[in-house]
Length: 531
Image 1: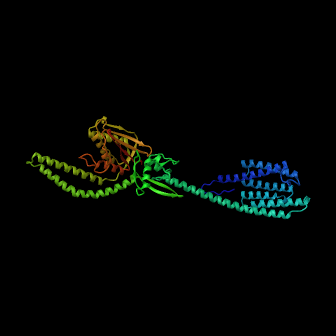
Image 2 (image 1 turned 135 degrees about the horizontal axis):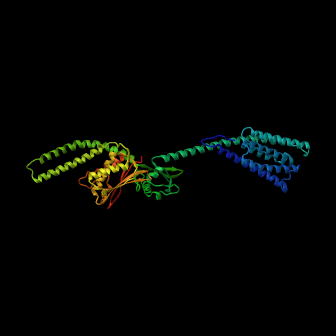
Image 3 (image 1 turned 45 degrees about the horizontal axis):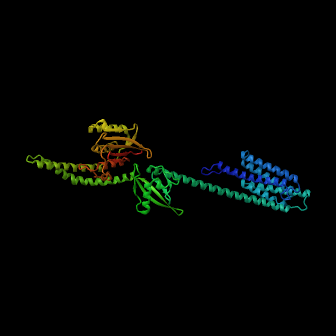
């Protein structure tokens, strides 16, 4: 009947609604026919039912009832097209009701009102000029029955005027019903278009939110999670449900930051690290007003990108600083070192003076190492990342380390997985692992002195490498500033080793964290990029 499609609206869906309406109209036909038969048999209906031709009234009522039952099967099986069924069934309705009206005494019985209902129903279900056909058919049928009643003379008075008025009402009903049906179809189509458009926009927005690299969470005024995307779950390393789950239950640390922000809205961008996570998360809170209710949108950003940008600014500043250091410190330092060496060649120096010169040389060397470390930091080149076969590369590195430090097989233990590939600059990776290995060997006490263990974090899809030592751990004071520049517990150290290692990892989109610190030793974890 209606074949208009919009944004995936199928003809089957539209046809189903039409067939359902036709079936409901047939239930009205079945109910009406059942009333006629029941009233006639029980003799409880209006006195004019079949008062002229009772046998005709009963036969037509019974046939009309059988026709209604037959329509149930025809509509269910859809043996005929929709338009054919509407045309034939409405035509039978008009003829059957006209015959019942004729058998009861004509238009003065009031049964013509039932024709108005049939014409209205048929006009709504069909389109075009068919509605006028139903009105014309009913008008002709009423006039013919009135003529027959007049010819046989069963009534004293004729009712041509009433028949004409009834015919006019048929046409008026058909036109109004047809106009109403068009309006209903237009509104229905518009509603479906808008509904499908809203559904499309909703689906599009959901896809955009889920595909965003930034994590998003919506918390209502009662503290329940109402929306969370995949990126947020990956950053938090939690599988969160939005079916009435409290944020305080799902993620207590994040709920604590939210409470702090509500109490002090100026603290809007705290840095947060979930337990056993591999990245720092930058939080951002925003209020959303909807229908008078206040909800909170929490944005979760991986702080790695921010750290990389900050690193670029620091390196630029350090570049200018180290140029000044090289000019202001290294030249005087070179003069002092050269003068001390010349003094050391004197034959008239006492043992006390030689010890003092030795101290001067050592301190000059230490200052020079500090300057070299700072220069190395400022000259750090961009990472030239390649795809590394991690287990093969680590075996070569451990072999080189063992030969250089004269280590036996039982002093270094490896737990590697074959076939694991990571993206990293091999020169940078060598610098990072050399620094971590030197620190671990410096403090290790028992065998194995070092352990290298590979693993995989399923929630973030990132490979990691653990470097463990058997030392006595790091003091709490030092551990809080572990990756800060010039932070060291060694009198001979520069305090830039771990700082440089983390900066190098950040440049390679990796992360370096201290994940274990106990009297049995420390464990540093290097998370590689997820590519």
